[in-house]
Length: 506
Image 1 (spheres, rainbow, N blue to C red):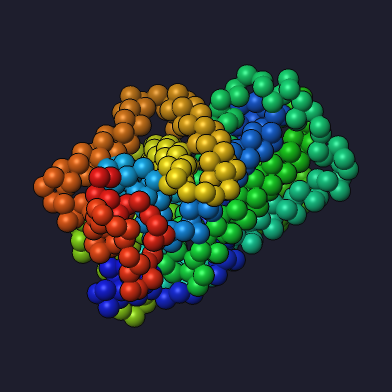
Image 2 (cartoon, rainbow, N blue to C red):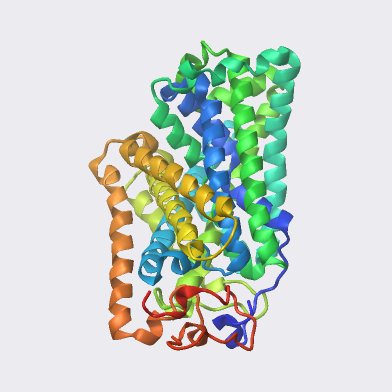
């Protein structure tokens, strides 16, 4: 954007992303088909059973409250730093530095987790049809394609993600329609929302899986510097994505309860787990549709992998700008207008992790995917909670609509904190293991955040010029003006000119 360091260096992004394209990117990150095939059966089996659809409604309403505040601050601040930038303007630079490193860790972990799932199920589906290749080869081929797409402009990724997302939603919608046609109103039993099912044993587990299924939806702000009209596209895309994903998850899980039967869904899910939706597809759509669903499961995971890869890249790019990570990460490709260096680094990180797990003889799904996705999911939920609190902090002295800037984000923060506590307390359930190394991973998130906060405090005294740049604020805009209000800069700023970060006290 105008006034950012990238522009000052003669580098710029191609502003090609519209609201629909951003919607496709962020819904693809949530991987709707993968969420239905794996998360919903687990939630049926060890969560609230027939009450699972209500948990998706609860998660959706909480994230809508989060999105209300997110949209309000996104209209004022449009920057590739995403939550890192928002938190800087709402809670101060030290908290922002900690959250920035938290974001890098969480998104890289989530990317590796989805990589493992893709490699595992690509191998499994291919073997079912006679093509026997090791999972490491599928991982390598996937990394090669992801690396090329990440090296190019976001427009190319958006086009591919839109195709993947439409296909995976289409096959599940076809299943919903087929079940509804067969069962009529019995496909949507009201008992799913009865109190004895909603508050059944396993409530915490179902809430945890409900929020985990929305992983990646909040990444719209990361594309602010690549959007044609960021102050409109980013907030609109976020709200649309939450509405679409929440409605789709609730409907599809509700229809699955109707097809199986509220009294049988827990036992059936426990007996079949990952095959549950394939069995439903066989029964209501036929074997050809099931094979198609299996293939689309792999493309769904690939799309989520690409979307999370791009999100991780943009956080590394933003932190490179502020020297919380090496400064050479903050470079834009002169021809593609992409964050190519960050993309290469993320690909190398993924390759190193894959090589380590492969050398240790560990399973790509049971070991790598579950542990890394668990770590990434918890980190992103904590990041969302901090961002909600930051909205309240940012608008606390501004006369804005209180519902959107105070009440809604406060409710969103409360719901997200509850989700974070549930994920932490059920981390062994989310990851599928009681291995003490894996169950201790949440502490890594807090340790990294603490390092970021401590480093920012050190910068404040030892490197004040670097400190005032944290959070995406230009040096000129960040200089204190003790006796008069700051004058508007000559070039339109990337943030709200009334922003209180002009004081180095934060």
